[in-house]
Amino acid sequence: MFAYHTMKDSILAIVNPAAGFGKAAKLLGPTMDRLRASGVKFDVAETKHSGHATELAREAYKQGYRRFIAVGGDGTSFETVNGLFPEALNDAPPTLGFLPLGTGNSFLRDFTKDGADFALQAIIENRSRPCDVIRLKHKAGEVYYINILSLGFVADVCTLASKFKRLGAASYGLAVVLTLARFHKRVFPLKLNGQSLADSPSTALLIFNNSKFTGGNMMLAPNADTASGQIEIVRWSADRFDFIKNFPKCYDGSHIHHPLIWTGQAKQIEMNFGEPMDIMVDGEVMTVEMESLEVLPSALNVMV
Image 1 (cartoon, rainbow, N blue to C red):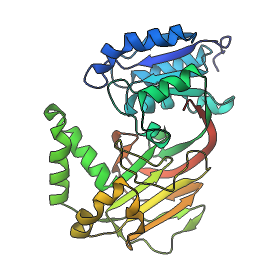
Image 2: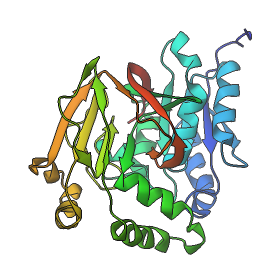
Image 3: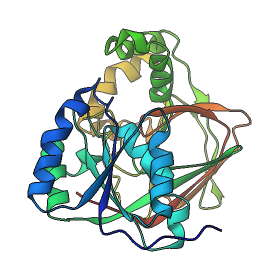
């Protein structure tokens, strides 16, 4: 066991200067000046490569930091959370703020449409509230998230888009077209709170959410609540034509009234799919053999 340092008064801002295709680096100076002018004490650590925010957060937590700002997009937030947990479960909940400079943050959309301005003011006012964290256990380890885990269509699109990154924004459009062209459904048997679901229909989209929004303004889980102590589940069993026709309703949350959509909640979910799956977690794509999901109630404080 390592020895913890004295608790730090300062906030650690973990900055991804590459976020928003480099826009974050340009906006960083004026934003930091505004924080200083408001009397906020903070230190800055910049990421140098993928996964670096996790390393920085983990080391800073050992050094006594308990308040953090993820300066970047969903990926920076995701990496920071995974640097704090599981170690933070042994102490009082750490606090995380967000500054989506030059990019978006889907988690913030649950609380505001104003993005960075709202987030900056929350930091200045030291305004925070409890937030659940969801732990994914898989064959090779654990992952922690605060927004969404998706299987099926959304995960397939994100996985394919990651292979076309050189195309920039066009990568997602191409990935959507190709995923629809080879549209397929899969069976995902689940146990909720120890009880098997009575049915396991062939499914096009399956999500396990902590918050309502993903992809900016897409309200995939309108009934989700970041402090409910529950994982919100949305399962959609539509065929290709029905899926295309109704998918636009995901932007206002009305898709959940579709007769082929089932929604539910659970504190703990077990799955045994028998093989690794492509998943999307808080904007990050990975391939893992999932075992379980568990909600960690109020494990984090978020500045919103």
